[in-house]
Amino acid sequence: VQLQASGGGLVQPGGSLRLSCTASGFTLDYHSIGWFRQAPGREREAVSCISPGDGNTYYDNSVKGRFTISRDNAKNTVYLQMNSLKPEDTAVYYCAADRWITTKHDMGSLPPDAWEHWGQGTLVTVSS
Image (cartoon, rainbow, N blue to C red; front, top):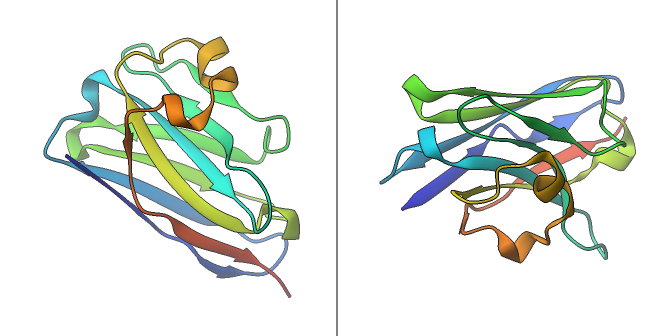
């Protein structure tokens, strides 16, 4: 069971990046996927999550209107499109998967360690 996060990099303020989270060893069809980020000196926080099936989504207030989460079950991949990036978006971004965290309330309130599977992080740096 493995999650691979990719797509990070250096981008100027106002720019865009698309992160990908690809699973191997299991199918994402029945899992919620969460994108989290951790900036230096700060706790890991949920950025955006998507449930299986109806694709119920959660966005942190800090990214609403700028980030979009989507899933492509055929590619076993979940994406996080990040637009209008700000310096405060700079962090290591992680993806996580869980079969039981499926409601918007739980996706936005449960701590990161409630999520079952984790991938390695990908660094996003927003700087001019």
